[in-house]
Length: 531
Image (cartoon, rainbow, N blue to C red; front, side, top):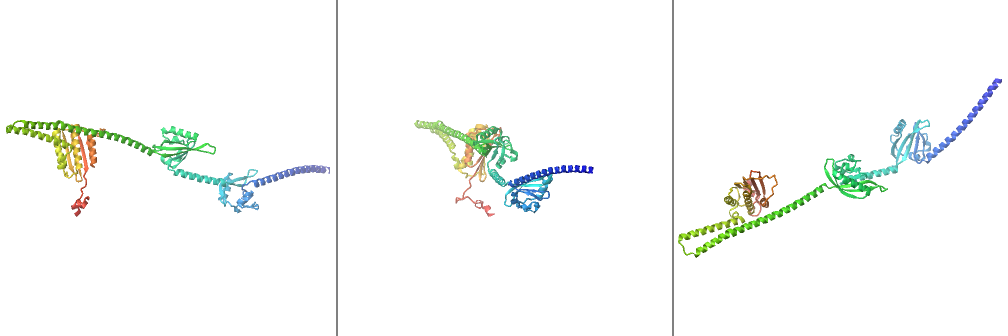
C-alpha cells in the first residue's frame, strides 16, 4: 500500500506538471490565436485597403481570398471563396489562363500579360506563386494593375511617333536628329536616298564620322557644338560623302530641341541637296566667263574686220591714186602733146595712137579688176561656175600657183547670196594657200547635188595639226560666218605635210511653183505621179 501510495504521489506530481504544461501551452495557443486574429485583421484590412484587384487560388484553382476591388472586376461574391475559379465568368477574358497558372507553379516564376475588360480598360495581369510558411507552393496570386492611363498615353505617344515618322520620312528634304554630342538618333528616308546608308548603319554613330566629307568635318563639329551650347538656329553648307563615294552639297539649318529644364536634348539638322544647283551656278559662271571671252573675241574680230576694211580701202585708194591716177595723167599728157604737135605722117600718128590705146586698155583692165574684187558682177551675168573658173585662171596667172577648177551638175539658178558666199570662200581659201601653205598646186571642185551645192578646195602644202590649239585668223572666221549665214556647213581637214582640204555643203532652197507654193511630189516629178 505504501508503495502504491508513493506511485500515486508520483503520478499526482506528474499530473500537476502536465497540467502546468497544458496551462502554459494553452496560454501559448491563446497568444497564437490572438496573433493570428491580429494577422487576420491586418490581412483583411490590408486587402480591404488596397485598391488593387487581387485573387488568391490554391493548387486546385479554388478561390482562397480576394480583395473587394476584385469583386466588380471579376464578378465575385463573398460566397465564392472555395469555388473553382473556372466557374466564375469575370469581366476580363484571359486567354490560356490555365496554361499561365501552370507555368507559374511549375517554374516558380512570375508571368505578366496586358488584358482588357469589357469596357476596354487596360490592366496588367501579374501571376505570382503562392508560398506557404514552409516555402511550399500552394497556388497562385493574381494581381490586376490598372494601366489604362499609361496604356492610352503609350498609344498616343506611339501614334504621335508614327505620325512624326510619317511626316519625317515624307519630307523630301534630308532631316537628321542628333544628340548634343553629334550622334545620329533619327535618319529620314530622304537622308537614306541621298547618302545610300540605312538607319541601322548610322544609328548611334557620330554624324561627321559617317557622312561628312574631310573638308567639312571641322566646320560641322563647330556648328553642332555652337547649337548645343548656344541654343541658336545656325545655317550653313556641308559636303556629304555618300556610301558610294559620291560628293553631295547639303545646305543645312541646325536647330536645338530643349527639354522642360531648358537643357538641349536633340539637335534637328534639316537640309536641302543643292549639288545640282551649285553645278548650275558654276556652269552659269563659266558660261558668263565664256560669254565675256566671246564678247572680247567678238570685239577683237570686229576690230580685225574694221582693220581689214581700212586696209582694203587704203589698197583701193593706193591703186586709184598711184596706178589709175598716174595712168590717167599719162594718157591726158600724151593726148595733150599729140594735140599741140604739128600734123605728123600717118604712120607716126598710128604708132602714137596705138600706144595711147594700149595705155587705155591697161587702165580699163585695172579698173575692171578692182571693181571685180569689190563685187564680182560676173556672177550675176554668167553664173557661179564661169565666175569661179575665171577667178581661178586669173589667180594662177597673178600668184604663180597652178589652180585646177572642175565643175559638175551645177545649176545656173543658184541664189545670188549662196553664189557670192561660195565665191568669197574660194577667194579667201586661195589667198590662204599663197600665204600659209607654200603649195604650188591647188584644186577647186564645184558639184551640184540636186537640192544642195558642194565646194571643195584642196592644196599640197605643209598643212597643220587639227588637234593642237591654233588661233583662228580672220579668214577662217569670215569663211565660217559666211557659210553659216547661207545655211550651210564648213569643215576643215588637214594633217602636217599633207596639205589642207576645205569642204563646204550648202542646201539649196526648194523651188516654188508659179502660184508661189512649193511643188508636191507628183507636181515635181510627173513620172512618179503616174506610177
